[in-house]
Image 1 (cartoon, helix red, strand yellow):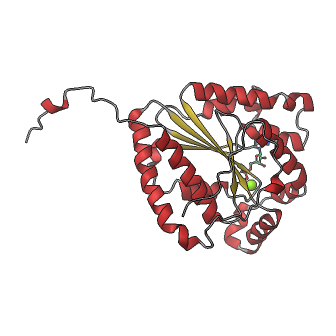
Image 2 (tube, protein in one colour; image 1 turned 180 degrees about the vertical axis):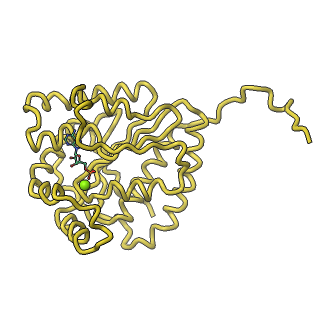
Image 3 (cartoon, protein in one colour; image 1 turned 120 degrees about the vertical axis):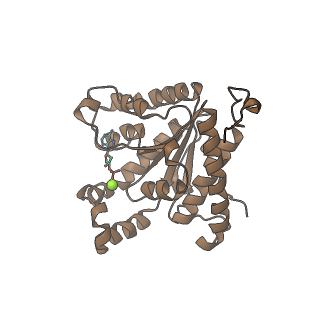
Amino acid sequence: MELETKNIVKPGEHVSLDDYVPGYTGSYTKKGQTKRRLKKLHKQLLKLQELLYAENQRALLIILQGMDTCGKDGTIRKVMAGINVQGCDVVSFKVPSVDELSRDFLWRAHRAAPPKGKIGIFNRSHYEDVLVVRVHDLVPAPVWGQRYQQINDFEKMLVENGTVVLKFFLHISKEEQKARLESRISDPTKHWKITEADIRERAYWDDYMQAYETVLQECSTDWAPWHIVPADKKWYRNLVITECIVDTLRKLGMRYPEPTADVAKFTIDD
Ligand code: AMP
Ligand code: MG
């Protein structure tokens, strides 16, 4: 079965999130149907990651954004299960520190960007600076207003210097968020996951949707497009994202580097 969702936002395309169904699962109806395919993709991902590491010419930056409970952590756990941890760094973007706030907003993102040979995952990212910052007026509108272009320029620079940038918006419905927040309240093993901020932020749902629509519209570029991932069903979300990463790495046409010595002449002593 092929995935029918290729929800890549075209540059300049108008985005209305109402047009995207968070519960979409393509031609699949349950998790079990995706297991074999996901297993195969994981095997391919492991090989491709090794090639990326061996080639040491490019980096892959994966950006995960979405509302609270949208599954950023779960995606990292599931999609990256089985890859070599040595070749992957995860960076979570929290409320900026005093030090971070004393720099330009892209400073911490640039510092955290993956070096050649590695996969870097941003759990939230520089996009918070046009999302939470915009929703809560943390800086004046003319300041965040300039940031879309600044982000596009920054990402272009990364791409021109050998980083592949993949951006995923994990799209959940407001109802699904309610269910996930409720389970964090009812299940004592999930209490650590819930904060007052999660409850507070939910009240700004519509403002966030607007802010996301602007991001998807303004910052989906030829060099770093946004992918809108239906994320109400975790298993489908995992499949879509894993497939996209594998496809992207495969298309790079990576090669193992030439040996630096005449390997044929090597003999190994007993
Ligand atoms: P969590 O992802 O649940 O660990 O929460 C991290 C929190 O940090 C979220 O509420 C984000 O909105 C917040 N955050 C991340 N980046 C920024 C930023 N640039 N400015 C303000 N808050 C931020
Ligand atoms: Mg949270």
